[in-house]
Length: 155
Image (cartoon, rainbow, N blue to C red; front, top):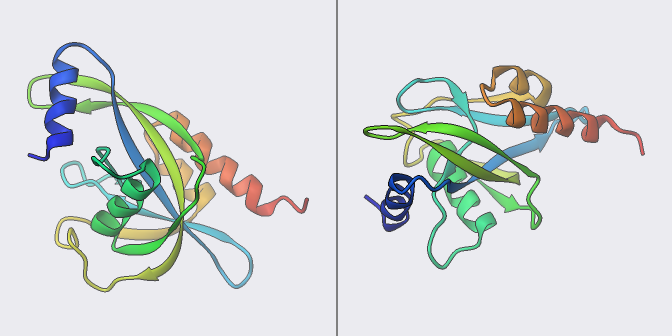
């Protein structure tokens, strides 16, 4: 178990909220349509965004980019400022804990044919509005819908 995860589990056992980072990998199609990349979770197989624990010595955006590479097999540049955040209940071994997630947009420059978690996950490119409908976390769903508005805003 990684050190960051062990630390998070200890904090969760004390009743503290814990933190993760996530990436929303995105691309613009030739017609200007914004698409985001979702991956399936390893256990429930529902679609999620790549996310994970903060990494010692790495910024939040760098950790989010690493998670996107490991979980979704994409490389790109994470934007400096977080796009937003959301909270969810994470299932741990003996309890559920509240997790606050900081989300970074990742402009995808390369999609790998083979990647670290390819055997455990499926990925799908979807219009952001469609991806928003698949999310169980309302705050993440809203964030994805807002991305669609930004991409289609003529201003």
